[in-house]
Image 1: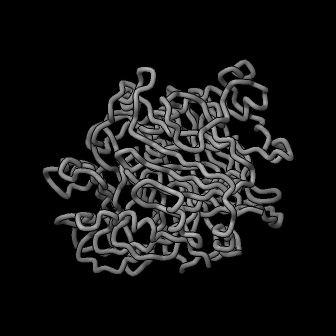
Image 2 (image 1 turned 120 degrees about the horizontal axis):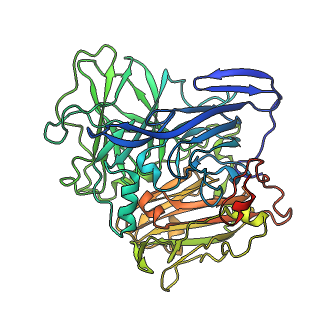
Length: 562
């Protein structure tokens, strides 16, 4: 049994209503159902009316709040004017990449159609978010928080909080996603974002010059003397953001499904695609409200001043509005590696239970022999066949026109290649559908080498991985001597600093076809991705869930669509 093996639970028969969901269970684990209506709505997050993608008429979308081992049935209605897929990064669908919601696993939902995702959050807890994965749509919204709670019989490794707060932060452009797409198609950079949103709203007017009047801002109301769990997701395009709350400490407790050693921070860097949980104690006096800030990192601060999100933490007994300067961002002038050191300090709480009763640290990854090593190098975008493209090991991934496992099931040939190079190749960059032919039950090392000029963030669907090493310079085999082989944090999205590397270890116990990609939307759109194809050779794929009864067909299989 791997890190995320299966457990058996008693049969149940009950009806449960929680918030937006109804759960009906006749046997086994409960099924939670919901509908997501994805449509355009008009809002003015930065004071200018613009068309954004709302979910059920809201921006951001509603919280999906479920519990370990629940089955999810989510009926997605595509009310946009273009194809749509919703993906669930960090949710490790056991042997069921058919529901993953990216082009290599699902045909897109056509405009004015609906389609139901069905999957189980098996042996999982944690903080995540969902979003549209195609056509650069996440730049226009369509995202919302996803929380997987512990079962009641499994305790959390801290006192039960008095409340929970979901916060979504991210860079934002006033141009819509189609205009941003056209910019990239023309070979141009997106430039500096117009701002940072917090829960879909623009900044509080902390500065009359930088922030115009009349912008609606987020206010989070708390009671004094309480402890809240705040779940923060960076849903932006690419900007790394420093998150902080004026005069308050943030105790890190969880990252993307795993409990971390509890560490106190005054501010924390959250990179594109990442999710964290913190404990916030409302232990300050209520003479005024307090700033909540998300500001751009690793940029020219004088040029990027406007790229700052500001919300308000309001004590219920507050005696006045917040005013004055924002709490300062980290000062890296004398400590260039501050963010790297902070990232390394995030370690697994090996004594805490996760989704199951046994401690998270019982999986001794540091003693397992590595079966394969993949060195994946990214560089600044290049021109291939007259178009600007992003690459990994010199390969820019061509978007699939049919899901790969669907092609396998219907004996389509020539759809993809299983020849992705395990190390950088000294050759002319190409556009291709080249995938990693990964070995089932292998234990692989992936080195992400960032020779680009900006922070690059990588995500692996279907898995969590151990972040065992991170440093500046070129990775070498000697770098393994500095790996954390005991309590490295496990997660599904990691940053790679420019001119630096990040090493991860992955136990390949989940069959399917899983997307490995840049979480920077511009790089992903330009081809910085690949897939891991993982098949159990002993059972010819039978351990993988069969294609769903409601499977969509597209591309060369379009004629099979009923």
